[in-house]
Image (cartoon, rainbow, N blue to C red; front, top):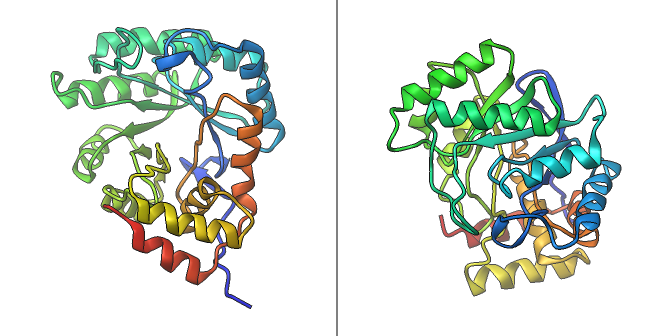
Length: 286
């Protein structure tokens, strides 16, 4: 019998929050272009409720999703929250229209959107507040000092970063403990492997977004072959590879449909073999 590769089902975020590693990303419960309300409001509510029923206790969102819509839906569906539910939200982007994401990580903007997130989510403190992007127009020290201040004020429990290098993380750690990093990463796009390794070495959660880039025929062929061996889909195998690849990875696949959510959750049940992992490691573009 082939040797399977084991993986941890949970991760301790910031040393005090026990997270089930397969979470939910709440970007796609908004309208087209991540703009405005969803086409099917009730289905979005069902997705959020079903995610928690299936064991999700980490939901990732942002004030810019909608904008505001995703956070409002989370509160509508799930408030009052269960004691173990961790909601991570983000700030640092403006919305000027569908699929438009200008960066603004100035303290003034972050102050406004953080207060808005607290109000919309009906929270006195956000467990994980992530900087959506470092703003090239604003000295990073100003942004980091602001985040340090709101953490000291008790509005934010833990702080994370998104789309950053190892040097960015090290700089931010002069101001606060970085407990999570959210970068684009997948089995076939491993540009940020050095960041993942740094996070693994320092017990920082790594949260990949766009977990299947589907960018080449070779990757799809390998994924599909392994998926057939496990009576699964290529997407489920791509998610499973991330769970097996590093135990500090937290997954946040997003969807606006309950059936797709349930399909994603089945990635937890796939037991990849050592041979599977070796084959999947060959398709990286990074």
